[in-house]
Image (cartoon, rainbow, N blue to C red; front, side):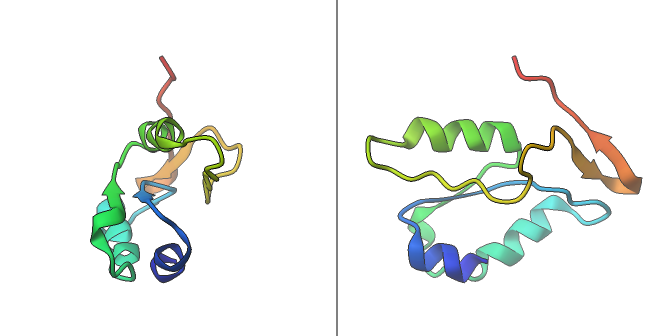
Length: 88
């Protein structure tokens, strides 16, 4: 996934998505290993914050691609616990 993002994206924000029993940062680091140009990568663990930042950075004509969760409102965490943080 990192290689594809590196090839097609001008800027990449890596974030958390359903880590279950894995450490979220380890998953992100594995994806990040495929990205050669580290100047265009930002890591933001809080998914809502990451999406907000991507949208804020967008300019007219920019395409923002948000992969993974779709319309789900929770993140699956360790032990099958659903994590949820209300939007302020």
